[in-house]
Length: 401
Ligand SMILES: Cc1ncc(COP(=O)(O)O)c(CN[C@@](C)(CC(=O)O)C(=O)O)c1O
Image (spheres, helix red, strand yellow):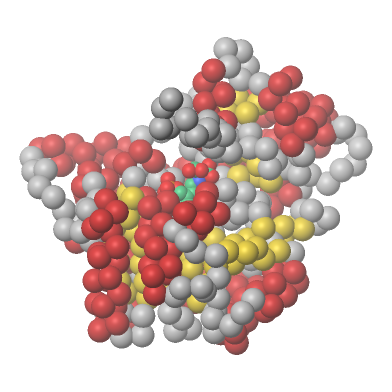
């Protein structure tokens, strides 16, 4: 008998498994609102024009395939930290940030979690309820204990701010609090600036450490600076904090696996020591990161013309999603005579809408309407176009009642 006999079949991933099911569906009306991947109005994947231009530049330049340093491409690390905090930020000028290129947001979160497991053993990480499905497994597999803080209020279809604060206050002093920098996944609900101040107050009072997950900078509002305002606020208050970044969505580099883990410290000496230990964790994990995506980001940010074009394309992508939010809202309002308040569709930010559909209702969306979504009721508006809003509204209303 095989020695692998006890290996069972793993369940499909709650998010990426939806795409597999979608691909297997042969019905022409099928709609993939599962994975958060941007699609154009004709529902095709989108390679940003600036990415093509940067790659053209790189091809003409002719570049080698030498190993990157463990910490990644220096030009990328500089660019990514400056994008996050602003180039003139004192944290940058004083060298108080340890930046290591990571395997996109997931790999960066994992490296940060591995650091926490090694240097803060037993410290608990608190994650929002609900949160991005992969957060739990990243932390568990890194050996980091986690628990949840209340976040979504089904009654108001909004933020349970009171519950969030209570749970963060109740956590042992010095816990790590995982926060979504902007465009909360899956709810699309972000704290207001005033609420971010209050959250910072509680973390300060409790000696908690922020760990920001910044997967949508520039993609949520269309502005890189606006979407980084929560992180910059905490940095300006002097927190020692982790920040994971991803260029999957805002630069469309999903499969290039380009991101970074940043740790902000009070001194350059501490940043150097932390960076050296992040490298020590990365080397046995994957040795050094892939170069292509890092060069694209460095070339786009390093060229003022490309950088401006990138900003315009982010505004275009964010604008298209806002357009389908509006159209879907209007379609729901015109079809649903129950008087239900659908305005949450407009209030939510970024790629997703948390519809409140239950698992069985989302099954109906798929089985009867061939609309693919995650079972927690999340739909990715990035996979929707104006032409399909009426159809989606019919499916939602049919499934809701
Ligand atoms: C909050 C959050 N953090 C990190 C990541 C990691 O992305 P990366 O590793 O590609 O950089 C995602 C992607 N979440 C997607 C968009 C895709 C996924 O599940 O992997 C989602 O559909 O939720 C995310 O939503």
